[in-house]
Image (cartoon, rainbow, N blue to C red):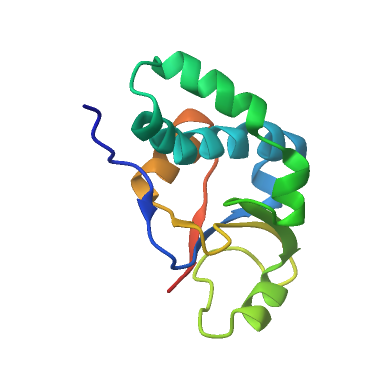
Length: 140
């Protein structure tokens, strides 16, 4: 039996923000978010087929990942690009506490009300594995 200690499932929103100066857009879209997608979805595969290895499950999910779905918002990971000021205007209940300037471009990664992010997993993948700093975004 495999015990899940990663992403938390419920219908609440959560997000994190990466300053555009800290990451290449293509790398974020095709590598970092793909790793998050795999980590987020693999637990459902464990429930369905406990005979598959981690490698087999991750390989299937890597094939399932679609950057176009992430950009269109058709999935549990959505990538949007905006300035800090636009972010604060849209999510008025949350004021971004960071050293990101008001007019600086940021990438907002949210869960599209799917699976609420467990930030220990975001830390592990985004910061530890890929060396990208981030700021926690809105969470309800």
